[in-house]
Length: 105
Image (cartoon, rainbow, N blue to C red; front, side, top):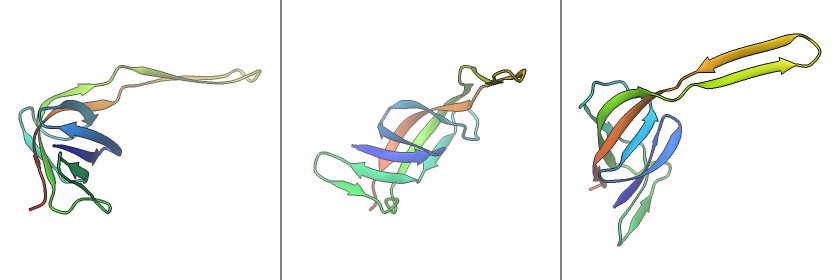
């Protein structure tokens, strides 16, 4: 069984016991969270596509750790104008493990 979930403005295809990085979700390590933005849920026999979400479907996950992405450098320049700007950015991420996928009853 797999599900397509939406969190942090992105979509992820997940199976049970998958470990993925998602945009930061508040919570301590070991906390169980419920992701209710399930866009699609499917198994070998049938699939259900939501409009926009599947009602009653929930994906449960456990927070493994809070982390940060590698630093990216943003450099802006305008030629012949002595305009230069250099900025760095590190995105906050949460590493989660999918523990259970529940379809609508």
